[in-house]
Amino acid sequence: MNTTVEKPNARPSGARLQLILAAECYFALRGFAGTSLKDIQEAAGQRNSSAVHYHFGSRDQLIAAILDYRIPPYAEKRSALMKSLEGRQSELTIRDLVATWIGPLAEELRPREDGNHYFRFLDQLQQNGPAHIRARAADLQALGYTAIFDTLMKKMPTGSPRLDRSRLALTAKIILSSLAQLEAAMPQNGTTSTDYPEFAISNLMDYVSAGLAASPDPRTVALEQSASRTTDFHFSFRGPL
Image (cartoon, rainbow, N blue to C red; front, side):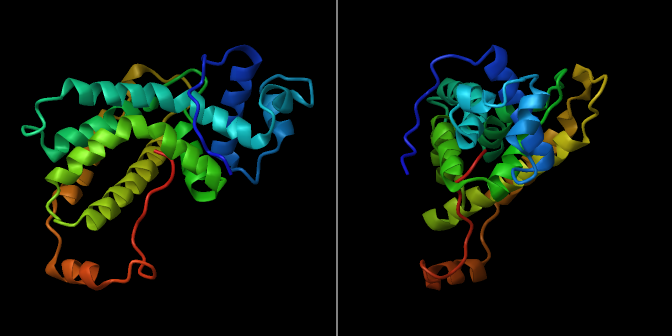
């Protein structure tokens, strides 16, 4: 299947935006199997029973539209942050790079009047979403992540690109799961900017930074060197975040 990513020409508005927000909410709270197009259309205030197909063409293209709506702003912020750090790579710590990784994404936890559902939607997508949509998410995010991951791998102490990639994949899964749990714990009514979980996010940055900075145990190094690349399980990353 063709997964070539085209950057959206314009931000959605009107009925199209309402359908995107309703779908994000329902997929986040009920999952993909538990959500019908009828649910989404009714929640978006659309009387036309073909509204999703009219605006998006299919259910999968609606899911992709959520990613098109959410990912580019964060990817661009992250890319701009990395660009601002050019020439300072030797001074940057793993914690600095992790903050650049998580910081723009965590802004999604700023309370919104219509509620926050993006991370739980991503968590559902990672667990149960169509493979080609997960691949699209990874491609859309490449702009913001490539430079961070390349710089992190130069600072990680493993000495093994394979082990580095496995650790980065595990870290991505931890970050997504943690942000989804923080989002679920947020008050959904009467929220203010002071409800932003700054302490929890900083603690998460500390935690994953320590993991990436940890030297591998000699047993892990020996196992990595002897493990079959075709049969031995290790963490791999091809999905959202």
